[in-house]
Length: 176
Image (cartoon, rainbow, N blue to C red; front, top):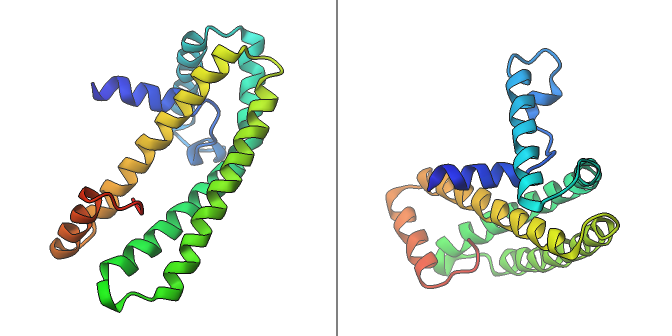
């Protein structure tokens, strides 16, 4: 079950720049390129896309990747700040929490705008069914990546904080 999720996650990343790719002398570059080719094959198969559609998809993905990454970073930082304050309970800085909640609202608005622009671009060469499949692949990747980040963050907490964070997640805390 984990391997298909990993393949799906990788498939969603289509042309996401990887640090190892950017370094010309990186010994991992051939492996990264091979993985990227495999990912493109999986995406192409799942979407039933032509080679031309895949070329255009890679271009659109690259166009929005920097903005998507920046929004994810802002979202993550705001959620981490909120989580840290909530874990302080009665000592929480209410003004800081309010500012970070405003950041979350702004990030969500910007994500929706980015999604609309991306869908407009994709509509130029993908069918509605292909666009829906691609959006689903992207959403699954986003959730999987966030889950992995949350697990890493949780593992760095002290046992008492870890228990508190798990409790907050169980009761539906939206700062996850």
